[in-house]
Image (cartoon, rainbow, N blue to C red):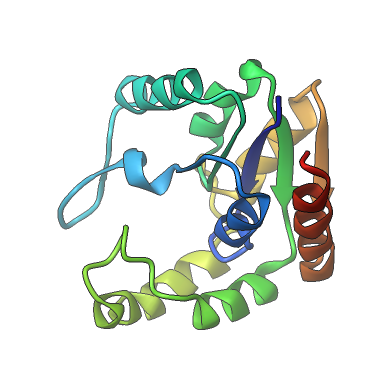
Length: 169
């Protein structure tokens, strides 16, 4: 079985890497929030049910997101933890060049209208103290006793994606 949990800041390359791995893919953004404005997190138990259903439906998978609390729910199911940590500047650059995400935004224009807020949020990664912060990601990574790796450059992330997809891992 091939199972990955990809964790990192917004713009770190999690979704791109998940697509490169060519495995059934769960983007945690799709189940972490109630629809509507302002955004409001769903209860952990509600999201957990969807994560466990996804895991039960697939032998091989990749789950990705910024949520240390949700990522932790998938780790006991035989996953390798991959922390994408290319630095805030690389994440901001990726945010400016990301393709339209139709599963999150109705139009490209709606996505672009959110870009300034997203860049501010990305820049707060190292100072936030919630489950979406570097502090929470580092604590989960450091405490995890299973297979794990940290990728700290865009080149390392791309190389891992190409190597893992090429070997069927």
